[in-house]
Image 1: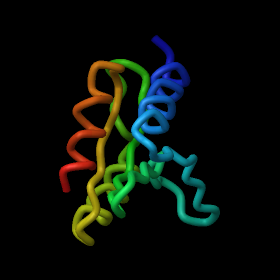
Image 2 (image 1 turned 45 degrees about the vertical axis):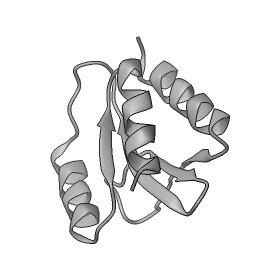
Image 3 (image 1 turned 60 degrees about the vertical axis):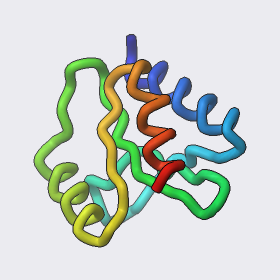
Image 4 (image 1 turned 90 degrees about the vertical axis):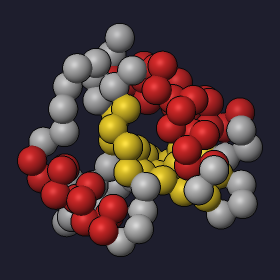
Length: 93
């Protein structure tokens, strides 16, 4: 399965829950996660989407650690089977 297919399934699953998984772009601040998941009730989390078995680059890991240190939830998604768990974790925060 391609990264784009996993990302599209994430977007659809979040929308089905009444939220949005917006493409997150940060010009001049490389390494930020691909998607910002916004759920009803003010719940949010960052999701880095990867092809199956692929790992985040070093700079991406630095950004993930920075966001986590600030109290944000950050996930690496590389399989469609992880989508429900990630969404439920964000929703339950």
